[in-house]
Image (cartoon, rainbow, N blue to C red; front, side):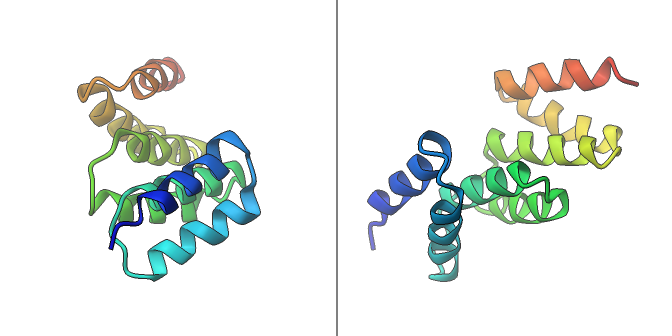
Length: 116
């Protein structure tokens, strides 16, 4: 089944419209349907980060990594670990994303490295 419209809608609700309740509902719906696309995991991890629910952010991001080693997920995990004061663990995820050429991961790696 092609759910590309659902992925686009989920991403739009999360990142463009900032409609967190509906984005969260849609991301969970897509994941619970058994769909293994990375987009709902990216959206849900961003939502949990926005809500400062760091443990859920890490959990859902790691679930998403099992489908796609996406740098946005690495960045979300790194940020969550740093917010939990586990900077060394966070740096390891930023470094993986930076090695993939991801600018946010590179920037966060440099920022958090300067904190230790």
